Each structure stands twice: as structure tokens, then as C-alpha cells.
Image (cartoon, rainbow, N blue to C red; front, side, top):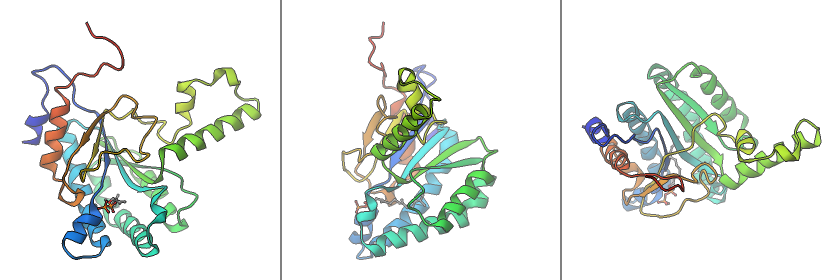
Length: 246
Ligand code: FPP
């Protein structure tokens, strides 16, 4: 069914090759059930698998998900520690299936603040799945758009200082090469769940021309069917990238 919804052949318009998702609403989902917030995050993690699996049939080659922001450290120590444990367990448990399903996993964000064990699991999963090409799953972990651009600017400035680059060569394309996402295409569509209409520092540079979809569903309730409908809707929109089409 999801395939039909995303089939844009009649309108001759392409679906979104790269979808980015702000997975919001885990905490409220848990609270509605009288459970701790981490219960919602665990339910949210299960949805990740379903959405990743739906991608190939929908023509979504790249999926980028916001798992932990540079601002999320402000949450309680219990929640942060629980999320970090959840990420470790997710990688340990899902690695084999991700490899088998042809998913190439990458992580974006600043790894310096993450614990060594988690970083080594992330590195290993990237390496393990590096030969895959069916779906490219990018997990944003300790990620912030401003932080990413700042880190890129620092590295760029260093190259200039070392004399390997002239300030005259600094343009948008050069800067893009220093971003965490340098190997990824820009997202075509950004979805945020849970009724909030904010972008919360997610892929600020890369989403300059993206379409946005804000849906009320809380992330743990976000199904592959709803994902397919949104992806299908995208196909009938027209994107002009600032130009006037004939
Ligand atoms: C936002 O909901 C969600 C997060 C900060 C964490 C996202 C994490 C997951 C979906 C779980 C696992 C992900 C992976 C990759 C294994 P919220 O807590 O802000 O919800 P609220 O707005 O209702 O409080």
C-alpha cells in the first residue's frame, strides 16, 4: 500500500530521496500512560526499525533521524543516562539486522562528549555496514545544526591558517564539504511528529530548500502507513528552489 501512495509516475514528479525526521513526543506518549519518559523512548526506538524498513518501497534512499540534540544534555541525569544506554543497546541488538537488510548506518554530531564505549559501537557499526547501499540511515547523536556549522568553520579556518586553503576559496560548496553530512544529499522533506512546528536546530544548513511536514502523531505512534502517506503527498508538490518555473 505504501508503495502505491508514493508512486508519482503519473504526475512525473519524483518522491523525496532523502527524508529527515525529528522524532518528537516520546515523553508525552509515556506520560499519557502513566509511565516514565524512558518507556516512551524505548517505544520510539521500536518505531525506528519500522520506518527504516519502509524506506526502500517508498523510494526513500536516505533517512536521517534526530536521536539526541546538543541541547538534550539539559534533561535529567536519569533520562540522559537512560537514552545513552538505549543507544548502546540499539546498536548492539540491531547491528546484525541492519547489515542483513542492506542498511548503511552513519552518525552525525559531535562524538567528543559521548562515552568511549558508545563511540566505539558507533564506529564499528559504520564500518560493518559501509558496504551497504539499499538504505542510508543517518543517526544524529549529540547533533546541533549551529554546532555542526561552527565545527565546520573551525576546521575550515584551520585549513586557511595552515595555508592549504585561501579565504577566497571559501564558498557554500567548500563549507558543505566540512559539514558532518558532506557525503549526503540535502534532505528533500523534513517531518516532525507530535504537533510542534519547530526545527530545533536540526540540519539548518542542509534544509534550506526542504519541504516541512508537521504531524500531530506522537513518535511512538508514527506508523509506516502514515510515513508512506506523507512521502506520497510530497510527490505532488512543486519545488522551485527560488526559481520561477516555465
Ligand atoms: C523527543 O521526544 C525524543 C528524543 C529526545 C529522543 C529520540 C530517541 C528515540 C526515538 C529513541 C531511540 C532512537 C534510536 C536511534 C535508537 P521527547 O522526549 O522530547 O518527547 P516530549 O516532547 O513528549 O517530551
